[in-house]
Image (cartoon, rainbow, N blue to C red; front, top):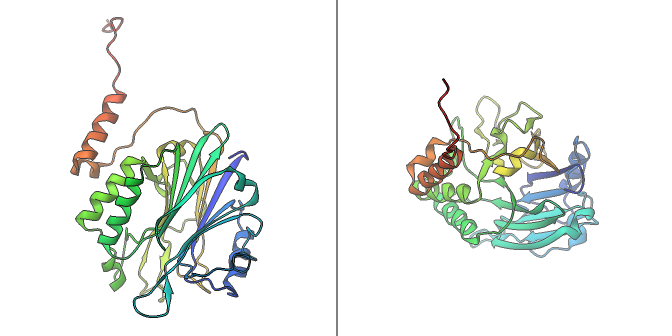
Length: 306
């Protein structure tokens, strides 16, 4: 965030081979953006033994840093699935202070040491369909207890917010264990959905990020791809964009998030109210703490107006 803004883009690529034409499509899409991203998150690349130069050539960040979380075998077959990666533009590469894999094929992070702004941790996830598996992932992210100032969490959560119908959607319902783990994670790192924050300008009216390829009259759609940001980054919100799907190779819409290098408005302490937090003891405690923090302290100089 030495520059005026930091832009992060994310895309589920549904497979990315060494000689895949998808790389040209990704490069073309990046070049068309209003704000060219300095960081690119990819999900579901399906790659294992990677020739770095061939796998990233033509995408955009050939001179930057690459962090790969390799794909895993699909059952007993030879086919590969999953896989995430984080690609960083060259000017930001020297700022990387930490990186690691939370879960093979599904979750990884990097931390940037930003001068005068503290640490920024970016977590890239490709969640499973199974609610129990997702619960385990959210628990692992919580247990990591990352010590950092700012968080960005994206992108493919496989959580249906709104559906018409469809078999896959039924697999992505959040069961009780996942709900508890999810709330614990968002509370621990004070995460909020950037799409729902007024500080982030919506560049397109498109709200849904997934289309299963059927005709529009029968398609199952949902916003399963999203960016969550820590509460302090709400003050730095610039824009979020759900771009048109690159239908040649993915039924997911790319997402682009931009934040200002400095708070866009004077910094102040505030909390938003989420009634679902009252269902859990930790949530109740967090809301009570926030409420008490907003109450004015008793003062001997305080008098009733006459």
